[in-house]
Image (tube, rainbow, N blue to C red):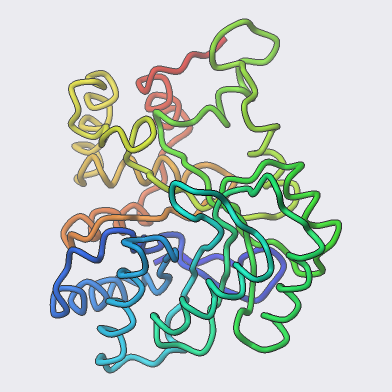
Length: 306
């Protein structure tokens, strides 16, 4: 498994991470098998959030992991906070602190390697975020910090007050869902892809050494479905299957390799709970698509080249 250093810190992470949003569906033995398979493949990074199954995903993970013969220091735990589902977003120091305490209790650990602010809070008081970040870091409860779904200016606002580096920005990204790329290619055009919806976020993260964590790497739309094998994307699937035959892997492996080929050096958040699919995803680290192949997939996903 290939690994990379996040930002300017010393934290080395695998380019594939385990997304734990759906592990609540697993029984304890299944979950232990899943965790063991991740570690066997070199995927020692586990991404959680306090809202995943209303905390049950963290609870199940903590219980299963505690009974395994694996040291806490041998894995990287990341969790996210800030969403009160269907009600509001909340970056108040009280909410962040309570969320972290609850996640630590459910995960049965004394610290998080990474805490990520889940979605921007319109009422954020960055001074409060700075205060709680300082407390969490100084108390040893959180070692590093990041954000999810944040624009460059929202990140800049936080950076004005916090003294910790923001190491990651978790963003939806896949071949069909890649306007971050399209807006940089369809410059000075009136096409749909030319619309800049995120403030040059891709370039910003590269300039500031913020790792993009690609979530929903196999989804189209906002959780509308998986594009691999979908009738909605016949041309894309034809190209994925053709390249899969060439490299003797699965289309899922090629779709993952497409994300990893981008020079932004993204980390893929793999949300599958199926160990077979997990192996296919991990296999992508052994493949480097050519430039022409990368663009073939990009075009087949419905994008254009001016």
